[in-house]
Image (cartoon, rainbow, N blue to C red; front, side):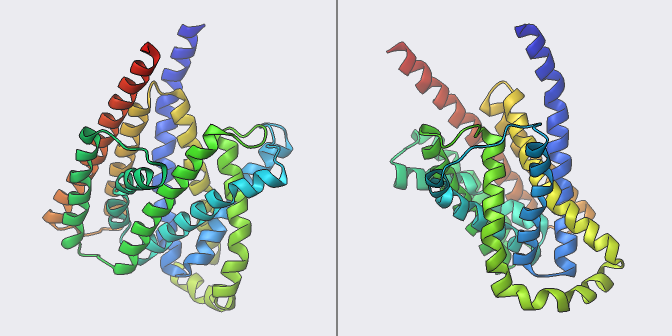
Length: 322
């Protein structure tokens, strides 16, 4: 039985990773295209969150996936995670719309730095110095790449940095939630689904307040810029579905790999693949310094992930031995 499970996982893993990378590339390309035609980031972020419901609701209604059961107090517990999840996604969309896709992903490579820093400050969870040293090439690489980035934009940089902080805080609240899970049938996929629905509901009034009066008047120009009304509408939908699905497939990939390190390596490779694909598709020019900084930062992320997992494994083994 163990052999069959291992064989099944070895077959599923490359499929999941392929889908994860492909959907991520698709999301980044479609998002940038529709954002260029309709530069309303709050509207796009809301539509993308709402598109996830087209995948989530049929799974629950047809009993393909168990429905989550949550009380009113459970929803209240989730609110801080929803806030930072929503903020992180919105700031990412703002960053992607304001600058090159490749630049956003270079800056977002710094997320482990904020996760480590905020975990130490807010949770008093401190990593060994060997792990913290690995943050240096991440920070240095991002700084090096940003200094000579041809498509540098403070809005893009600020959005990406803000999303790093938001997702790091979301991760801290999620860790607290793992200690005392809420509701029933709240596996990682259903947790992401509930967060998506709550985020969508919270974004609708915000979007209507800030951009509501601009949406309908801006659509005709967006259709002209895109070349086709149907193509614009379909690719806006694709961006939303791909956003939701690449996150869901990421959870599936984590479930079939041998260790968190394998997943971390896969996540690092994903960032490289998205960077390369978006650079080629949008014909983004990068200086040699930006390429060097990008390489150092992504290499640092990989090193950090591997070293952190190694020390976490040692800590678990030591705890078991006691």
